[in-house]
Image 1 (cartoon, helix red, strand yellow):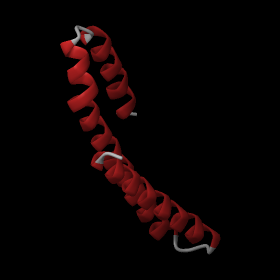
Image 2 (cartoon, helix red, strand yellow):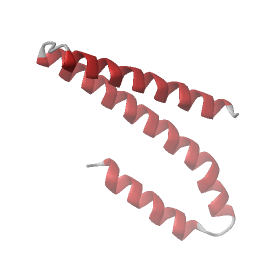
Image 3 (cartoon, helix red, strand yellow):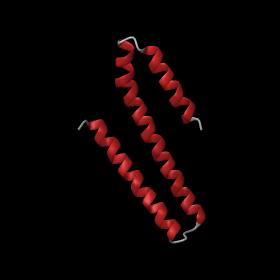
Image 4 (cartoon, one colour):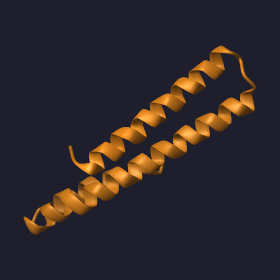
Length: 87
């Protein structure tokens, strides 16, 4: 398994752990602001994972597609990604 995949899997496992922590906090009726802060931390971690995945995609798949002349398709694909990231 590539080093990049190991890092991504480790990051997602940490995110899952944080989500389970949020679930437990809700079950235990912890203070709302503490739960919100944990949710914000999960969202931040997800964004970092998304950024990491996008960087890997740009450095591998996109470079390869451009070399093959599939630049229009890959640009359209990336535009869709950026449209959804802003939501």
